[in-house]
Image (tube, rainbow, N blue to C red; front, side, top):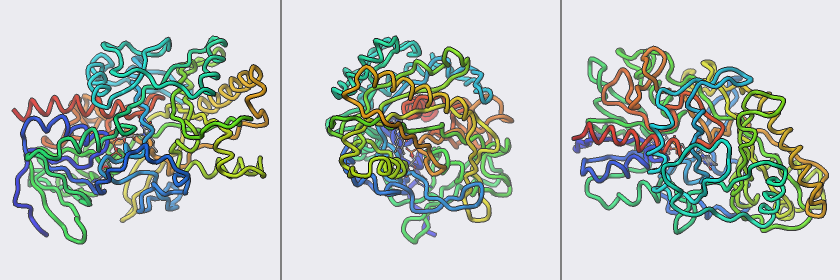
Length: 500
Ligand SMILES: Cc1cc2nc3c(=O)[nH]c(=O)nc-3n(C[C@H](O)[C@H](O)[C@H](O)COP(=O)(O)OP(=O)(O)OC[C@H]3O[C@@H](n4cnc5c(N)ncnc54)[C@H](O)[C@@H]3O)c2cc1C
């Protein structure tokens, strides 16, 4: 074991949406910051993934197996690199709706209220949108929460075929909008180019890559983390600092806390509530494919969103969820999900090649909130990391899919020459699709029902914080990334106060 001879003010573990954003916020304080990241620094832009390569199954999945609730191994769709999953994300950066912060009855149960409200997050959403250069437009969307400022950049235009669909949807009385997208000089913004790289030339910031944090060591009373143990290559290192921030992603952060159990924290660090690893949520996600008669480029971005069914439908008083076009199929990063869709399509259209299928289709991405459940959880069984997840709120999601297919059929009737109206193949997400994982260390005021306090500091360990998606008490149906970023900026303000 090598003991690092430096002492840091802050050690941040993980450099994705949470950790990468936090270092950008804290770096100007001049405090000595160490970033420990298990992946490598890759400068490749996320938008350079426009390539049929992305369809190679599991290319962007982690190499280590996790295990599902039957004990079967799977390789999770999660990316280890500087920037984490933001290096492979679609860059749709949405605010949660105001009501998402309140208790909401769903068909499958209750979505709990957050103790911090939309008004508290609003300034940080605005800061996040500026930092990640969000292009968007506040439009006539009945669910859109109030914005104190307009988006920093104007919206990205739809591909002609998507614009034509948008026009038909509007005529039908629906409210299609332009999706908010983070876009920089070289494509989609991510936590590496926006968070980490801009501060790497500062003397007070040190990045260690291929540094896999394996354990947290506390002082004898268990009230503080004294050291962070990381494996770099075959060698173990100990790093020491005043404040430790975990940002490994909801599943890996919970796993790290659990496997660091010691005498004072027998069930895992900061796990007196027993909630570390529990309430894992990852949304119900489906892709529906619409086949077109004419060709499109296959490389356009996601641009169209629709929330008309977000809070329900005429004959269904419970929330259904959010719809967005999944972009040109070649552009979109559906990875592990894509091959099943394409094999289904190949069967339906045996004379079509992959490229022809991709350029003659539009994907629709449907997202429904899943609800926190104690039995959906991350834990160790011996050395094996188990991810027990049983989907809930499924009827609401199915209704969203059927409703959307009906809407598509109406669109196709108006434009019969544009679409091949044979079928609308659907593909659901298996357990390894953990893209929207959250909830494993929920925040709250009560230490018996939450792991983190409202500043995202653990109730039990006074110098330990979590700024990744673990803190969500409920998920919402919009994508989580902007809320992770906004929260990291919010916690950053608390840390700056503490570091003074
Ligand atoms: C294909 C895909 C598309 C997506 N598209 C969107 C989208 O369009 N919009 C949206 O809002 N969200 C999207 N998401 C989700 C979004 O990327 C996540 O919500 C967000 O990245 C979560 O941030 P995080 O900080 O919790 O974790 P991550 O961004 O996953 O960061 C975790 C970091 O911790 C590192 N790490 C993990 N364990 C350790 C360890 N033990 N030691 C050291 N380092 C460690 C990882 O390498 C990584 O850098 C997408 C995700 C995927 C996979």
